[in-house]
Image (cartoon, helix red, strand yellow):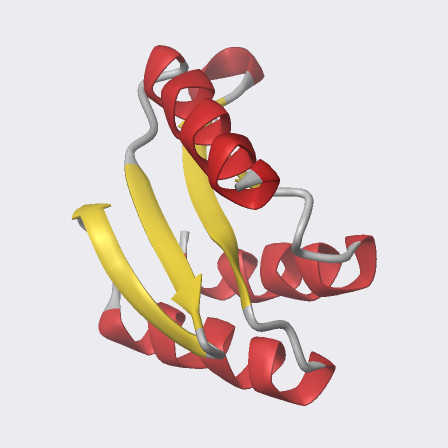
Length: 93
């Protein structure tokens, strides 16, 4: 139940930041929930998630300082995984 509340709260916090895209990680599989992003990026994110053995979480893109897209993630995604995903994003942005 606590995990569900965490996801719901993260979802509404993310909505308030107007994410450009949201990728959900569920049972180790990445899928696009909203927005537009390259299928190759989603596939690469899934590779990182599988390699690092994450089972659930969210990855989302929001406008950061100066309008540049910034990649954020839920707390289920480790800092190491997030950095790898941010590194991947540089190839797709």
